[in-house]
Length: 243
Length: 242
Image (cartoon, rainbow over all chains, first blue to last red; front, side):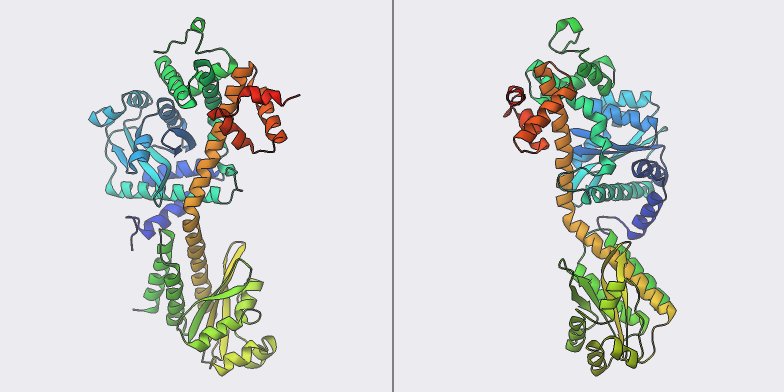
C-alpha cells in the first residue's frame, strides 16, 4: 500500500501531529516537524530555480540563523537536497561529510549544530524547496526518523501548495507573504548593485553574497547598508573590495 | 474477515488516497462495493456535482442498468438530491412517505425492487461535493450505527476525491507559486534598479514604477520583470511621470 515509499499510516500520524500545533501555521509546521522526527531544530525553505531562497519557517533562533547562513552563502544541505531531489544526510558535520560546504559548515558548527539532514519538498515530480533538520550532537537518524522526515517533507510540500492553491491568480498565499518580504531588502540591494557594477541581477547577488561572507555578516545586514546608501560597490572610499 | 476487519481495511485503503496518485474511478467503485458489503444494503451509488452544479452519477456497486437509471433519475429529485441539498443524511421513508416526497423517483425505485432508500452527503467542512446513495431490497432501514459508518465512509471518500483534484492541479499550483515568488523578487529588484538610477529611495522608486504601470495599463509584476531585463529603463519611467 505504499507509494513512493510513504506509508499511509505514517502520513496520517504526521498530519495529526502537525495539525496539533499552534495557531500560526508557519511556526507550527516547523516546531512540529522537529518534534515529530525527534531532532533539535527544523527549517522549511522554498527554493526557486536553485538559487532564490525564502524561509517558510524556522523552529527556533538557531534554525533561523542557519537558514540565513544557507541563504547568504548559497550553499548547504537544502540546496543539495533541492538539486538532487534526494535526502542529504550528514550525521557528523565536523567530519568528512561537512566538507561539501566548508563555509556553511563553519557557520553551523559555530551555532552549535553537529548534524544536518536535508529533505526535498517533493510534490510528485516537482521540487519546491527543502526541509532542514538539525541536531546539536552528531549521529545518524534512525530508519524510522528518516521515514518520518521524508513524510514530514511530503506533507509540508503539500501544505505549502494547498495554501497557494486557494490564493487568487497571480497572488501569493497570505501564509507565504513573509517569505519574500523577509528578503525584500536583499533583492532591493541586488537591484542597486546591478546598476552600480553594471552587471545583471544574478551576478549582483553573487557579489553581494561574496561580500557578506568576506565580512562575516548576514546578507540582510549588508543589504540594509546598501539600501541606506551607506555602502556602495562602485566607490573605493566606502571600502567595498571585490575581486 | 469480520465486519470490523473489512471496515478497518476499507478505511486504511481510503487513507491510501491521501498519499499519492491513484485511480479515482476505481476508488469510487471500490467504495460503493464496500458499502454493500458492510452495510447490508443491496446497492450503493455515488453522485458527484459537476462544475455546473448538476449531480451526476459517478459510480455504483453494480452495472445493472436499473441502478444506473435510478441514479440518473435523481438529477432533480430523490434521496441523493435531498442529501446533497440539505447537507444531511436522508434516512429511508416508508413507501408511502417516499411516494409523497419523491413522486417521480419512488415508483421507479419500487419497480426496481428497492424498498428502502437512504443517502448521506459527501462533504468536507463547507463543501458538499455529492452524495452516497444506499438502496435496499429489504424493508429494514439503516440502523444509526450503519448510518454512522456510511457517513464516515462518505467523509473519507470526499477527502480522497478533493485530494485527487489537488494532485491534478499541483503542478499548476507549484508553477503559480514559483511565479508569485519570482514576481515579488523582480519587484524588489526593480525598486533597487530604479532607486539607484534615479538617485532616490526605494519608496519613491516604487511610486515611479506604479505610476508607469497604471498609465500603461500593465501588471506590476510584468513591468518589474521588464525593468530587471532592461527592456524598460528607469528613464522610460520618468518620461511618463508628471
